[in-house]
Length: 174
Ligand code: ADP
Image 1 (cartoon, rainbow, N blue to C red):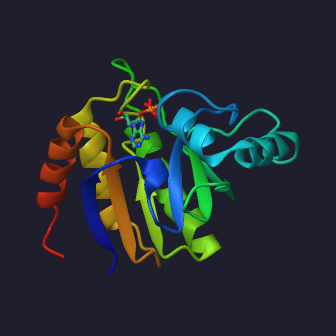
Image 2: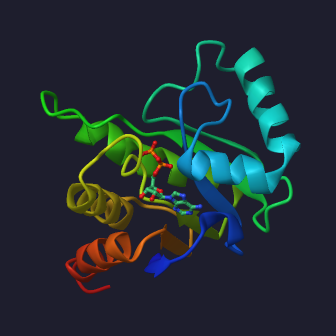
């Protein structure tokens, strides 16, 4: 059974096997979580991402998929990059956001990662409403079979922490 926790913090500081990056499809860096991970993790992460672009993903990483690289100087062993959907008022892209969490856990299982930290994917620059982002994040992780022992949601603001903690509390007792 996977333990699911929520806490306030900076994803780059987590002592876990893998941290998940809310990347964009270029894999070449951006703002928010992505910027922080590349800044703190150093140049090896970007080099690994460039190599992925050259080999596996010349068109970029599609939305909803995930791929792992080294974590460079971060305390984690791996960074799992996933591309969340941009929030849309006209189109329901929830399945793509759910897919980010599922695919990241699938990649984590492939690596043998026992502990994984997630940010609130799509809830920053990609503008997903926080309560819905939390509902999808917690709901998907709790319904995905995985060998990961601990999934830690690391929220950057007290507001996000509160919303994720509420969504966590609404999960069936586990
Ligand atoms: P996206 O482009 O998928 O929306 P962002 O990185 O812009 O991703 O934001 C995702 C969430 O991560 C936001 O709630 C933002 O406040 C939060 N965030 C930003 N920096 C960090 C960090 N260093 N650690 C954890 N969460 C962060």
